[in-house]
Image (cartoon, rainbow, N blue to C red; front, side, top):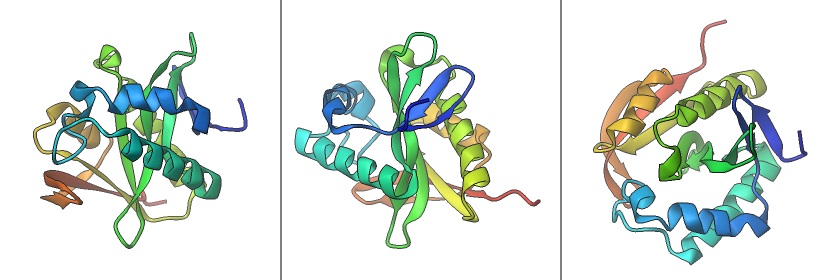
Length: 174
């Protein structure tokens, strides 16, 4: 494990980003297929938005071991996407989110990464809950949020994104 590695699952390594890895994020969030459900406008992120996001994720990782993390396959070190905790709203509630390159969809990587992060969260933090949310049209992402054990709370707006389903994850009873 490198010093940026947060956790490993059976097939994946989740680690923090470095500034010199921005091209990977440009490829991921610059892809119209990937970006379709990530924002209310459904367009790829601008390079400025991605630069800001990466700087924020790096700072979150340094401060709290959170942030959207790089997800690579153990078998060959190939980057498949990102998964991790952002911070939502003025209360700064941890929010799990993920995005994969389309060529890796359908392999169970998102659920594996998100499950590993959920378990890490309960083991390594003392927080009592976190959120998950996805565009109400994105059934694949919503399926992951449900399998992860989230309880649907409502459908509403998230920043510039209307029609988002919100899920809450509460710390399991001891």
